[in-house]
Image (cartoon, rainbow, N blue to C red):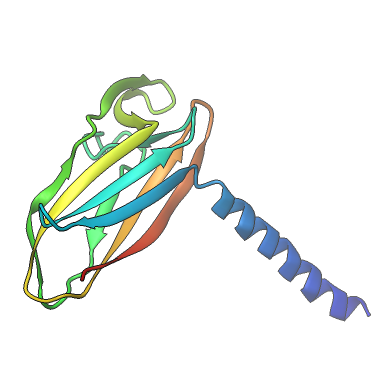
Length: 148
C-alpha cells in the first residue's frame, strides 16, 4: 500500500508547489495589437510592494531584468527596438549592493512591426520579481497576439 501512496503523495506535493509558484507571479500581463500605429503594446500590472527590474540595471549586480523575446514569424518584420514608455526609477538596493532600475505598479512597452499578412505574434517575457525582502526565481511568460 505504501508503494502506491508515496508516488501519489509526491505528485500531489509537486502539483501544489507548482501552483504556488505560478500564483507568486505578482504581475498580470496584457498584450494587444495597436493597428493604427502598427505596434504591439505590452502592459504589466505589478502588485503593490513588488517591482520588476529594467534592462538599465547592471547585470553584474544580480537581479534578472525584464527581457522580451519575439518569435520570428513569416510576414512580420520587427522595426526598431522595444520602447519602454514607463520610465524606470533608480533605486539603491542594499540586497544587491548597488543602484538598480525598477518599475512599480505598471510598466508599458511597445514594439513596431511591418506586416505583410495577417498572422500571430508570439513573444516571451522573462523576468524576476522582488519585494524588499525576497525575490521569486526568474520565470517565462508566453503571450500570443492575433493580427487580423
